[in-house]
Image 1 (cartoon, helix red, strand yellow):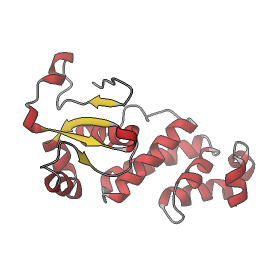
Image 2 (cartoon, helix red, strand yellow):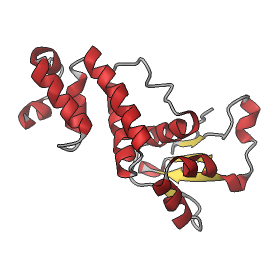
Image 3 (cartoon, rainbow, N blue to C red):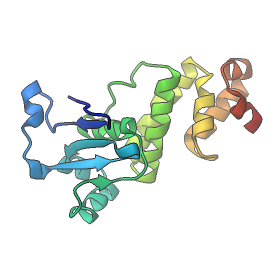
Length: 180
């Protein structure tokens, strides 16, 4: 369950999603507020996050005296994807959707996964992105544009352009074409 309020994004993700009322059930001390870009906030279970990744656990512990934990400059979508993956070991939104917006979301989520050396999430995102690029080669351009040179998603995008240049470059923007 996720809710957003006010002019600044604020999401609340409960430890259990069995019923709508269970979202508010976790005790306040078991929840942590993660912050990201432009003041976005998301509440999640400390235990779930900490059990999934040691670096995230260390960051939460180091910032336990603060009102909110900053993992870095990540989008609300990235933070929500991180929390969802930690809770369910999958992403419901990204499965089967092969759009530029989904590719951007996966690219951003890949960044947080790599920054925190979250290998299971990195592999999961790579597999989803690979399926997307296989189905829609032009999405490889999104990954090339949004990733650092040398990352696995950047190389995947480059491979898509190499293997099917016409299909991959049909929707490429001018900035990417200049880069190539």
